[in-house]
Amino acid sequence: MRTYLITLVGLLFVLFSYAAAYDPLDPNGNITIKWDVMSWTPDGYVAVVTMNNFQMYRHIMSPGWTLGWTWAKKEVIWTMIGAQATEQGDCSKFKGNIPHCCKKTPTVVDMLPGVPYNQQFTNCCKGGVLASWGQDPQSSVSAFQVSVGQAGTTNKTVKLPKNFTLLGPGPGYTCSPAKIVPPTKFFTADLRRKTQALMTWNVTCTYSQFVAQKHPKCCVSLSTFYNETITSCPSCACGCENKHKCIK
Image (cartoon, helix red, strand yellow):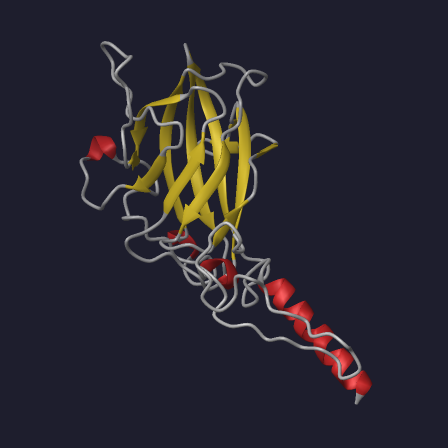
């Protein structure tokens, strides 16, 4: 009996620990967000941002994905194709050309189907709907182009965005810090020439049902019969509304 209880407690501990780390139904699934710097501009760069849903079953339904981040310096978004920032922010210091977005923490959404052709980009404009790779690989990709200003203009001076967030469409995803990876390579249409991005970084976002909940719905307290104390529940289980103490 004693051995059985210890084994049961250990098993439940492992299950709950893993549930907080990833989706147990798809432990290897993730959404990878890749930034490819395609060209330098006088005050920044032009990048293609590609979102690949490598999850087997979990797709993003309407109203679609919402991507956010924090600029490392004082970057602005001059233009976007295939997506748009939800707020422009304070661009009052600019004269002449006004940036698309001046916020330190921009929030970006996909364009809706049917937008004018000059606002479209490859794999864009699906209203943020993203199929899972396991069910429809061709529809599991979303992309847009962004022109960034007041940024670095070389591989050594560019500062990577940080604090990435992804809503799909609700909470549940936790994103890793951006990481520089080998530049993406591209083939020309005739497959006879290979080009590559000037710089590439990746962000990996994983889903957890535990993170998707504002707070745990319940708590199970387990203790062996010979233990003098009872293992208490977390202070934010069962309806706690204090966000500063709850699991993020």
